[in-house]
Length: 255
Image 1 (cartoon, rainbow, N blue to C red):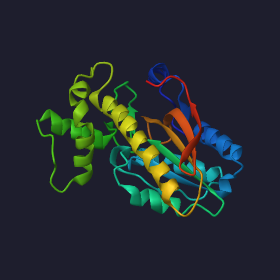
Image 2 (image 1 turned 180 degrees about the vertical axis):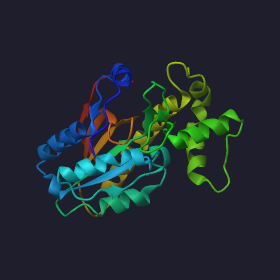
Image 3 (image 1 turned 45 degrees about the vertical axis):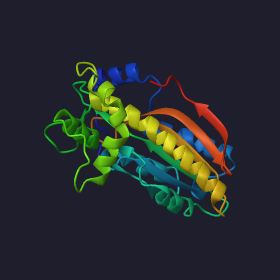
Image 4 (image 1 turned 30 degrees about the vertical axis):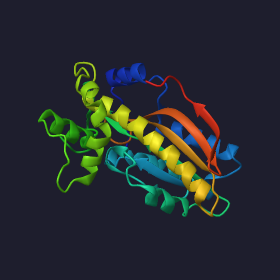
């Protein structure tokens, strides 16, 4: 199936707002450059996808396979917020090959449809655009109704609300004409989740009997018109070893 044609006005908006975005093959190529820089090869590297469960996030797995990485560990959560605790990260850590490398690709997501509307995206074989990120939309709509949670039988939505509640006033003031509150929510999820992951990685490496270096690749996924036109606003790559941050590079301007 041919790749859909990019919608030029939307491309212009994305490049204006996130001038350092990469498409998925470009991102994986940059990750691979780092992998080689550590003395490892993709075929001996276990990636973990720490993004949202949304189907828009699946294209990266296909590209990783094309670059000959090992099958990706599923660390997906709603909105990409890593609130699963230490067990998921420990499981991933123990799936890294002996003398191998782990790569965690972390990034919440937000869509922009062909009309330039933030928080929306076209999906395959659906007549109208849908929400992206749907979990953040769900919390936003509950907040709009005055319901800040907790939400019965919905622990992940409760976790998102709890984590973002301190920023509610700023989020709800985001102008919908040029952006959308869910876009602001994704930015706060990114900041909170990145802090969580860095702490957990260092704690795990310092305490676990196994020793594996980990690359943490962090940024914001930008969903555009179907699930194979995504962009990734790469913000930093950090190498951790033996519980310490040993190398880091920031990419472009952090929005």
